[in-house]
Image 1 (cartoon, one colour):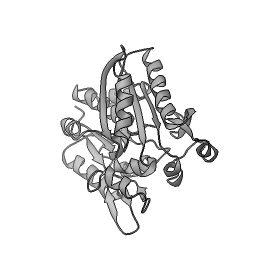
Image 2 (cartoon, helix red, strand yellow):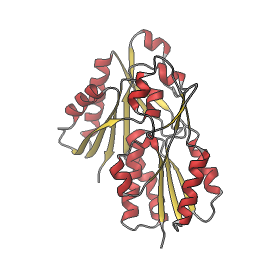
Image 3 (cartoon, helix red, strand yellow):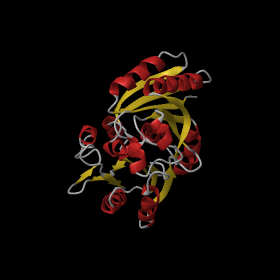
Length: 283
């Protein structure tokens, strides 16, 4: 019988109770300042990142090689025969390639590395749905073959206050910035399924209109089918709550959750003011 381990990274924004419930192995990004380094979600908070952006914008790095090796060593000792790794979009990080190399050092464990081409709870939903299948006793091949289908049912949109941090972190993708900022253009950002990079899904002028437009987009999608929704934020709880309140009563909502802040490392690249809507189409 397959003994399947599930691995993801700290940007999936999964609550600790679900990580514990499904025995999910989480690898942690690093946040690097000039004279200090932190481990994402371990010894740094989102508030710390936002409060110190005016002093220094840190860089980020994928999980340490030692951490990745230690996780696989531990899985081998526990008798795991298979592993499924779901990563942050490869269009935004080198983690996909890094963990692939580490997994090849552990041939005793048959490993699937799946590029979510998502962020935050988009990636998190993929991990959770995978965890449910493993809990039901589905074998490795079945779960792996289901991943593209699960991913196809996830929609994700977000807005930020400024594109400054995405640009400085090299995460701007196909989202045009300079002229738009001068005109106060606020893009609604999504992720391209082909390359896993950000692109402009729509754009309006001004923060208030961008929030309203994102609600319109979500409601239009909801008109077509039943969805569970998750609303996330980065130092923008009040705005995220407004978005949540305007979406949650739609007749096709199966479940709605107002989530907490995105991971500290994601906050490095988004800056304060992120509001995101993640949608999962239910059967």
